[in-house]
Image (cartoon, rainbow, N blue to C red; front, side, top):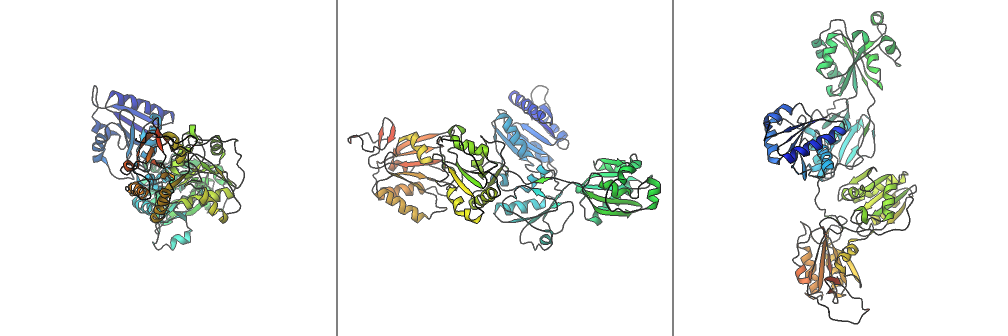
Length: 624
């Protein structure tokens, strides 16, 4: 891979050189250029030079410079190189062009890892954690000659609609969510009710998108002096008749007598294909039923050149000898390994509306290191995710697992202690699919760790896993606790939950708001201390205010001491203490946990404290 850098400041030049060195250690070829300043290079001329020669262009500059420079050169997602931009302090890294087919997203992630930048990926499939068909094809070395069907496939997956896939090649691993494997007969009968993509060497009219596997070896036999033009025309007609996509051809093969045949050599060079030739002895050693010609045997020493040559180092003969204008052609298929992604591609993400999401917890120390057994699913509470806050039991379970399963935010946290463990993720709202997949893998004997933020039994996946377990062969389910946000947040504020308390989520995705209102009113009337999860979001911006109004109507006074903790145990942690009246207008979000005290909750030396009654009642300052 050829990656070229251009930088416009001294800081940027140093960053580019460091990034280039890192890529070179991974086997990439790089080039670094200084734009502007002494010995400056015109950046537009630089881009024009490298746009078709390099695999990726990296700008250490403002985004606007990169956009204006490459805009006149863009042709299409199937041909444009990757374009990535970083600021000169290495704070943000943005893939601009060819995120999937060009590999810009993955390159941006690699560069971000090198310099600690925030990788800002904006492609919809990455942001929403759905299968990206073009990115997967790129990772597998599969070609996408026509890109028009990508939008249809991706759009369906983003909507949660099924997409069909017929593959002529075996694919290892777990089929991504949303993909339905279909047979060849199903493909032929496809009425367009669902979009379908095809993986193979042929072009199939019933598929909306062809992913072409470069596994077809083109065997050729010809007379001495056959022109390159004749071979070009004959091969094009042969591939069309055989239904083989030209992009599937990965090499040309013939007998060693043709090793220096000008027409064959030029044909292979024109298509940038390796040209392999073999002796008659090697060709005769191939096993199988081949066409036979006495004339060819007399001249070459083997009864069929094109078929036998194509089969050397191939798995099977697909198309037998075809003669076009005196030139013989055959196709054999090489073995080609494909694997579904172990984890869906990462990207930027927004706070989730999932009540399980962003619960932000700590973790408790545990006694013994667990031993995962066969047919066992371990549901692990991570706390806020920093390894320093994970329990020893949780860390041991993650490191001993065969598969980490969960929502991508939590899986990313778990990877901090188990970086090499394969993972399976589903997007938000796909919790049932996530749990069924985890149970199925566990039933097959894999050691599966389902990860959740905070405590797995508090708005987590433990209950759902147990509800669904009856659908599978016996699977033991074990829950490893973590500290839920009510407890970790309370510790940051002081001791607001020393007396009776309750926890209520304000998310109405899974619980009707009318029921949430009843619970809030009951908690207020009983003078409970209350921890509120998911207090607000973009779609529920006034829910915290509604909850406060219900508390006031239920009997809590407007001067009741309250608190907020944001980003518990994570960078940017913030705390706030005030009154119930002030809490009504607090700008909370999904990263917050809110606390409402009871009638005795007070501010003691700056801490929010709810006395239990060990000491005689005394008057504490209740003003925030």
